[in-house]
Length: 448
Image (cartoon, rainbow, N blue to C red; front, side, top):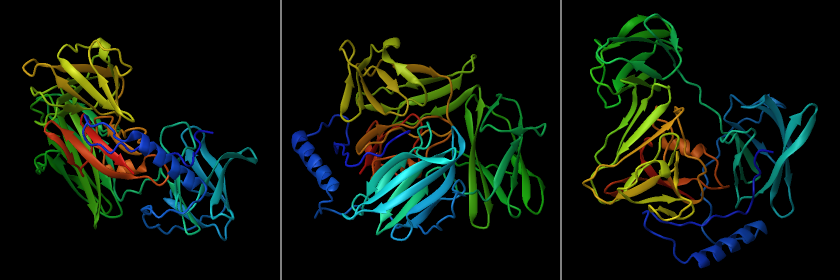
């Protein structure tokens, strides 16, 4: 069994926004949380605020052992259906068979038992309880990876089984080819400064798509740089032609649209082996490049200011004992409470990890500070791990793509919990944020 769903487990809500704010009235809060947990367990009615829940999407209940990979989910009326079988792929074993039994109990709770098909027998994988007050199972894992495979929601006798790995079919397919017409499978493409670049983008759909391209800074590519090479009834091939003039990453967005449906793909053309740069006035500067051993190196350069400077590692971990920390006053982190590192003071908080957010202060703003680390790989899309109820100080992993906020809601969480707020932390403070999450920055994420 990969992970069990534990009911009636509550976390403390620290309800803070700034790193320097500490929890108050902790003892009272713990007592309240324990009482609430006991109340849910015994199905005690509550006069507090009702749990907010989105409307159910209507799904068709699949036939026995129908595959779930290509579907967003299915629904079951537990007053009529007591058992549902289905198949879904997992990363370790490929296609697997599963069965869920539903039992409505006398106290209004609904018990589910999830079984895995092993040979010709179903073996219990996990079980849990749901009711209208505790209406969601935050994440069910069918394999060894860190991404939840299923999510269950319950309301008025109806169970929704959601496929967390479902990817909506794309209306257009984009294939990249080099100048010799060989397929390029990576979205990271290495190019040379002052050498002409030629690549082809073949886009196919149900009919001839309209294809445009722009750089990430918003500048559109004209016909001299991005032009039609060939086309047909259901495809168009565009030719990219440009010459890099600087050693930096050129981030290209290709947009393919048919009717009112669009697909946007991002590609990084890395000149001078530099694959990512974050250079904004209100954040530390970050540069990521490849090394001769084909690993990656990241380099943070912190601004000459005396306040907090927030950051997150795009990849790898950083052991503070191996870097020059002489100009660092303090480093702050957060994990169920504020963590603090001070040079020369014993602390368990001495290794910075990818996916976590941090903030530091300088001893002398007139002295430069750089933090340099390395990692073996960089991911295309890296969500933070282990979001908890309350405040989370996080970053995103990888450098090839910003992370849409909508992706956060697909992460495993406690039953009935969801991402409520996201704040970006900059050198002049925090602000409510609705955009994509950028590698190198740090964010407060509130789960409730």
